Image (cartoon, rainbow, N blue to C red; front, side):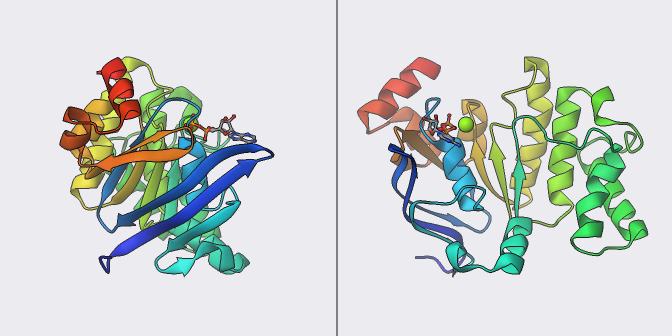
Length: 246
Ligand code: ADP
Ligand code: MG
């Protein structure tokens, strides 16, 4: 195994009651890699992502982050691990009662004990980076969905994460706003950010992913480089899924 593995998933299983949602999931994410996870609705993609940072407790198996079994972390280590795995959700999850700048400053001040001035400067730089340097003092509700999602990405970056996990970041957006969010994500990928992206944007997966993982019924049925996976899917389920979406 390469030494730069950040996330190592071994025989991960998750059950909700009798419902086995994740079955024998194995996979590694190396530093700088972009993994796109695709597959039909209900196949376990969100659950998989949430098991990576223990928003969901796996039923069995292991998730190693930077070589450490996440199940063995104490409270402090768990908090640190979650800081290092930033997450971006479908519905942005911004704090509605705070300005854009306050949204970005909150965690660095509270969790990292950054000074207000330092957090503010960092927040402004990140907002400029996602093209929203003029929106510091507005509230999320006054922004478009695409702008809100770019704020959410900037907020995740404010904690200097090692990895970013995205759960269908463009699925809640009007079609004309999808591009601006994907452009920010593509730029991050080019800058070397490690990312695991659950997405239905096959163009993005094709262009940006180092590997695409196809999930169905709780299994990762196929993993490959995007060109191989999209042009020569091996598994029948992958073939079927791809023929329907492309
Ligand atoms: P996807 O993101 O691929 O659409 P999910 O991971 O959301 O799939 O869901 C996979 C399966 O797990 C579904 O059958 C869903 O109903 C079930 N599931 C997800 N979260 C929960 C939960 N908190 N409690 C019970 N069942 C859940
Ligand atoms: Mg989902």
